[in-house]
Length: 184
Image (cartoon, rainbow, N blue to C red; front, side, top):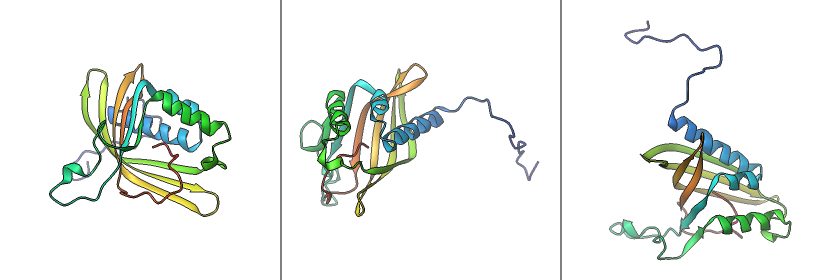
C-alpha cells in the first residue's frame, strides 16, 4: 500500500481483461487512421456502413452572438462534403485509377484522433465526439494541416463497428489548398 491507495503489481504478461467500450472505439479509430495513411482505401471502405453519411459543413466567421450559424446547416446549405458510400467509392476508384491529377503522386498523410468522448449509446448505435489533426504532405513543399472536431455515429456490427455517419467540423474557415482530396 502506498499512502492510502492500494497499488496493483505491474502486469508482466498479456492482460486478458476485456477492453472498455471507449478503448475499443479508440482502437477502431486508430485502425481507420492507419488504413487511410497506408492508402488501403478498400479496407477503409469496409469500415463504412452501406447507408453512411459523410458530411463536412463550411465554417464561417461570425459575430459572437450568432454562434449557431458558425457552420453551414446540414441538408440546407453548401458543404465541403455531403457524400454517401457510393460517392466515396467513386472517389476511391478515381484515386486508385492513377489519373487523379490532384493525387499523382499520392499524398502522404498522418491521421491523429484524440479527446474521444462517448456521447450516447442507444440500441446498436454509439455517438462519439473527438478532435482530429490530419497532416498531408505532397511533393516536396505542399503541406496541408487540417484541425477540427468530429461527431461519429458508429453502428455495432458483430464484434466491431461500422461508421454510419461522420460529421467533420474544420476549424479553418478558408481553405488555401489546391485540392480537398483527403478523407477524414
